[in-house]
Image (cartoon, rainbow, N blue to C red; front, side, top):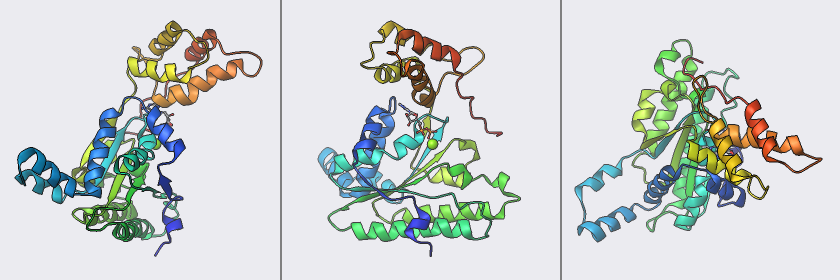
Length: 306
Ligand SMILES: Nc1ncnc2c1ncn2[C@@H]1O[C@H](COP(=O)(O)OP(=O)(O)O)[C@@H](O)[C@H]1O
Ligand SMILES: [Mg+2]
């Protein structure tokens, strides 16, 4: 049996200020945020759904039975740098606030992959799920959960690949099967455990995994308004004119021959590049921002072939 340290990066108790700030800075993900809050609240305390039915429909309703055996799996799919990891690792802060419970963030270590031992992937995954069961049982009770656990499987295409890609890689298929078994063991277990699987290549995910997801969220590059919102926030207090920010939001949009900037192209490349033009001699100016936008190229679209 792998120890907790072999399986996961250090477990983080949420809420935590850095992650809460990160959650709040995420632009354009409000629908997903709300949905995750609702789903996780039901896992933490299934009685909430019955209470809702009583309040709004005068008693138990047939539709509730369809909630009983759902797998607590959410797939975050879409472009690189669009907030999948950031949301997966921070939505627990909102959940903790909403439920007034501690939330524990577990991030599966996929790094051991490739070291070659047959059975290693299988044991990594099944031990991880076994661990989630043990910890989940410890915090659940008839009065609802006393804590919620989030298991994040990031860059999951390394772990869960489609059957077609499997012919040569026996061990990868074993990883998929272990993951499916783990998810199935959680469905209907009534444990306060939420699993989030992030991937840039939703087409490469095993259909059996996709079928089990309670919801799949697709993350996209920012719209004009979203780029404007991210840039406005990033340059707050620096005296950059709103017209300039507007102009840069336009410049960083899609054109005939290239896609628009990703969220991370803006936050992790454009903003630092503009600042570093001025640092350390002088204050940053509108020209720095415009010049940085002219110089940078957006991240190419991630294609399934790669
Ligand atoms: N929706 C968003 N709103 C604001 N910033 C974002 C958003 N998505 C991504 N970012 C920025 O890009 C960085 C990288 O995002 P990340 O979550 O790692 O992307 P990925 O989808 O590849 O996992 C984040 O830390 C954040 O600074
Ligand atoms: Mg990521």
